[in-house]
Length: 221
Image 1 (cartoon, rainbow, N blue to C red):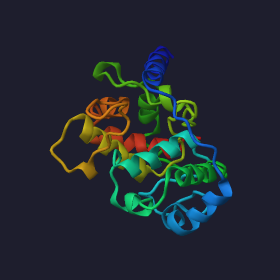
Image 2: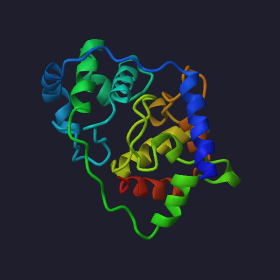
Image 3: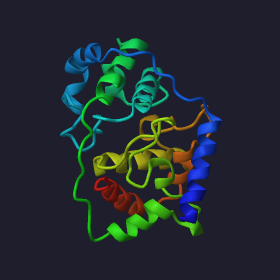
Image 4: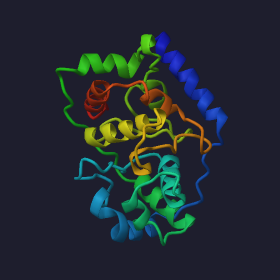
């Protein structure tokens, strides 16, 4: 519990260090039309993806979705497919898409890996003080529900493959690995050139940590 409280306090500091994301008033019906033509092939019409490397989006908090779409649009978050799909969309379109997906039924959960669930659960809920790893639950909630106010995403039940990929990209950014921009994720930082919470935490994770955490998160609900 003490570790979780420490992690929570760090997340509160992270929230206060950056402005809360403001989403323009959105039109979910207009967003649905864009989803039909631009998003459904990868993320599904209702936000449940059949591609494990692509995230489920249904019921995700609208601030997080809007921020990610805007970051793709500006190039702060790099993904060629996403940037191509939203190249012609304006900020209102992005808000409409985010609003539409946020109103869909939340996705479910997977079985996870029972063999490593206890080990991963300790890391998810309590972190690892010896290595300076704070808990995931402090920012993302013990059940993986996220924090809508802070635009921290819901991760519980998300595809393990997607979670693992994102953690490795945050780690590459946090460690300043000599890899291409599309193999790093830096958009958790408030300002370009700084390191955000996810980069700092992921930099301390091993390949095994990432594997078991990803499997554990996929079953959290």
